[in-house]
Image (cartoon, rainbow, N blue to C red; front, side, top):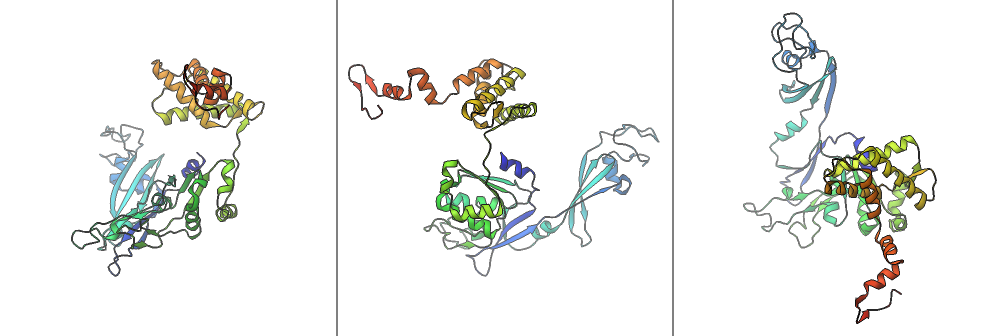
Length: 398
């Protein structure tokens, strides 16, 4: 959640990364970075093109008088407007060098916001060089990686069974696949359970230090093993998470890099019980419901029951009075279970009783064993009994 919030405050990526066919060395495609720049300015309606002012509702289409987009009739000639005034219009203009340029005109109160993209990307597209778009501009700036394989994290070059045959093979520049470190360029890379990456942490450290990382085949027996793309950009903000007991498994050089250029944050597990924080729990409830998309919204009483459960968990787990828990993953499970109960009963909203039932049923298996058999060990013992005649198997749990 912190990484996603951080990504929302970052601007959209403006660099497009292309892989260009290298005619001099087919096994070493070239990286090309094209920056898409945007010009933004505010202008008065009378300084905008006539067609744009008319479409946005600032000019009468009959007499040409200045008017307001909110009015449906011209105040000068009393002519009704044809259709509703548009909020935005995109037109194609020509720059001084003759190149085409897309310009967006957007209504902003009593003025017009002009957004013009620089024609660099369009000019590169007209270039005769063969290229493959590896990363588009205006892409998502939040990437979550699991690190389950080197290919996912670092990229790959796909195998060509025809060995780059000039007629039936696939050129190397078309087989380059970006990794998560490259997709997060100009954005945020989030990795959960960082210590589980093991030796892959070294590659993350290199990418963070150099801000670029080569792409090559991760399979030595693949047809792309001899292909290498150098200097692929990967300038990202790195956010990782792990449990406290696993911190010792993070590589020391990587931790040193994090401490030298960032922060190690121990998240709070509770917060003070105040009206403002109660509203935050209510907002979290609505967010979880929207994220699920299949369960109904909750009533006020249901949210209050969830808040009371948050106070109870802060008191029992963290030994904190007048506090609310921040173990939101567990609360999210209660919300979804309560929503499933509401759907099962065909209820329009999640009611208070649904939350209370979900709290009772959303207990860990250890608590359920203790309630049913009196202790966890006794529950395990019962599970070893295969029949009344033969008794139980083994006694290692007793």
